[in-house]
Length: 285
Image (cartoon, rainbow, N blue to C red; front, side, top):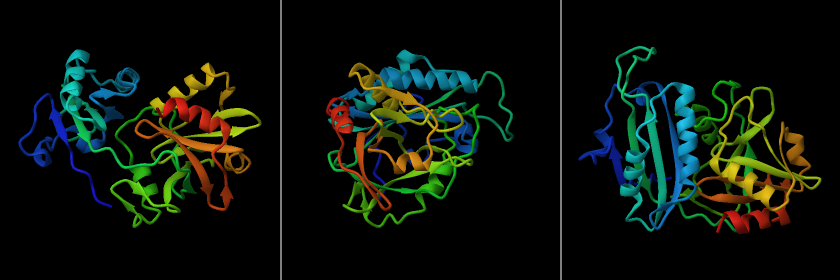
């Protein structure tokens, strides 16, 4: 798998001459994962669900005690990075800032802002995908549940579990594993490695409640909102592997790809169900 280059990059509002050497070695995001990030889809200079992304970013900063930067400045930097692009993936990273050795943060630190645009992966969202169960488990920690913080080592190790040889620059070949589902340390379903998961069972659209761990995705919230508007009964509740096994439909969501129907999970097969089709027609447009 090749790594897509950065199309455009600003660090604290400046475009570095050498992006590979631009981040200070004592930045706490680099040293300790002390920060947050957002990933969103950009099309014709517009960022999908930008207000929701910035709202989640601000809420995460409040929970972690990181100073949220001036929002007008941040929006200006986002517009500068995305403004000339027909499409791409926007990534915003906020870290607590630069500091010396040691875990304890110093008061009054200046938040580091990283705004980057990456190429949009070539993905066919109309074709159901294949999932697998991950062996790696997510640790329960309610104080961090819901946030998209920079500590992603569990997801990194989970994605190492399957062979990436059929994946080239984000394109998934038919029959290959596109994503893995992750349980927590008690065996409860949480999410995919880079997505939230939904099932349809007995006419109800259900997604894990994420009370112990996992990321409360912006696209997840958008799907819940749209489903309620469409009169589809929704629920956020604990789910277990056997709930997925007996589901009528399964789909995953993230901010870049929207909704992706699941066609297979190991020995189980599904089609593109009516609820998935209905929501995809609205959300993926």
